[in-house]
Image 1: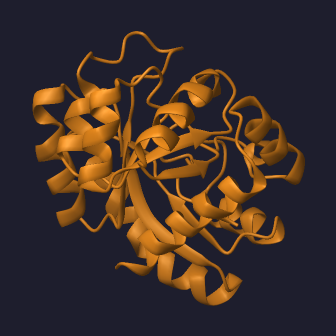
Image 2 (image 1 turned 180 degrees about the horizontal axis):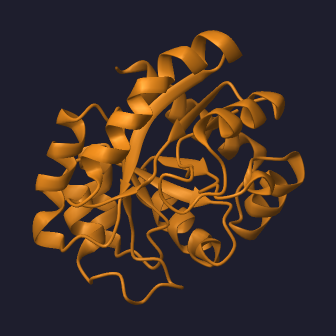
Length: 215
């Protein structure tokens, strides 16, 4: 399994990076991205610390560990600048915190700004517009189907438009604590809620693998 959206205690996760990676390995993961919340105040702190340990964890646990971040609550006008800065600091996967239906405080226009920035993944984009899905397809931005409670109530909507238009999807956990990691039951439940199939899950995993193989 590949999971490209997780959090450690460098933001609001419960685990240090080493424990999160070890637990992911034991859960059968092939690859995991460590994508703590970031804005301009902590981006250099978070990304540089994660990049320090990815090679060692990859060698020891025999799992692909990827340094990244989740751009969170940044004004839409500054998202492109934030994505560029994150990449310069060493983030291989740049996620942007989308307009989740359970977080109405996320600035309106975040989804569009994230897609235009050509980030890698737009996380839990909620009731995204059809036009934004079309731009995501054009810009090759992956739209997230999330297993996280709350955020996942918008999954069916994201899936419906993405399938209609041909935009690429990815399934991630947005892990904050050990029990958030992928499990067979969790995957089945989320697929059912979003009216997706095991074939769709295989395609989402393929999209994730193609992304990590591109760098």
